Image (tube, rainbow, N blue to C red; front, side, top):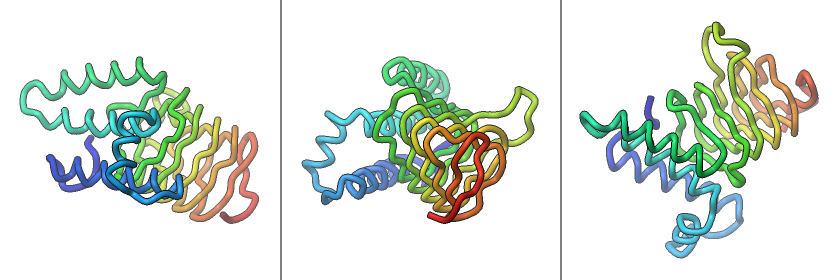
Length: 185
């Protein structure tokens, strides 16, 4: 699966611009060329997201794209100590400020999602049907675990170290082990 958008170079550029805009928003700074250069050269979180965008672009190269993508994915996992599965669909606007200990299995991540360090998104067991869907604007706090084919609603917030085993509605706040709804974001 590839990044949502127009595909090709235009889709790649649009996704990277959306990612940069989300990083600028979270840092309360304008999106300028100097900011973009700082993100690319000095910010590991943005570099991790950019590496995913490059991975999706490599997959579109005829004949050699799939093996190149696999090699790039392996290198990215080694460099950052985190991984986003090759089969994961990632929309534009992904904010990962600290790319450490993150494991994202096959799932769908919609626009403007925030994923903090040590988040896990995976299946309950190898025979689980379906996969998780992380809704637009969702916020996954440090250490959160999303387990199984659950849906995290649009704008939902998952608390630190929460273990989500059931769907979380739009705008809800889920905390605890197992996670329970405690309010709205």
